[in-house]
Length: 265
Picture 1: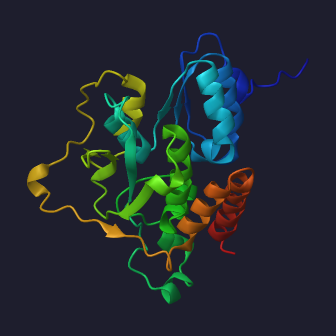
Picture 2: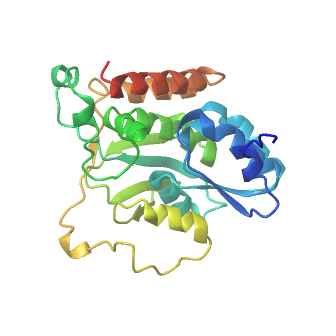
């Protein structure tokens, strides 16, 4: 008999029975389903960074055209989104993205040159997929998140700052014109931002989710990023500023480089 092809991601994402689409693929595979979802009038909850890195202008224009919101699932962007609720008429002075610094934050440049995939995959605070864990270890991930924040929140690059915050308790912050800073805190568990993307504007009680124990939180520490040791962050920001196809090239090159690194090359 005839071979029936399985439905494409775009077909699934634009199916009439679907209300909300979670795009959680890794890499460039997220772009076409995201656009198909928006064109079919669906709310998109986005966990895939590369979609906005490669085609942020196109994706956000599509969302505006159909009067749809894109709900971020990345913990940092979810934090910013939560901080901005009720602040629609207030201009953003600065977005502060936090980075744990990953498993290699205390290594010297010389040590970083000899790091193995196994070492880079041991993230101290987050459980994530292999590619994003490697990207986190060299801060490329944070660079991609800067580009993502630029598109999601329509903020210029010179008003997006990255701080190292090893505890991963403060997920990100927004500073407003009056100098007031709003932060979103929570246990480092991706189920929290995933659930909020599904429940928004409601907040659901869920006994499965961890609560932040403030009694055990003696201090909150922030450090500037050492760009000499982690040049990927600067590379990504420069690609974002250059615009055009630069971020797409950066994203594609990163995918290939991570693949080679993970296979021991």
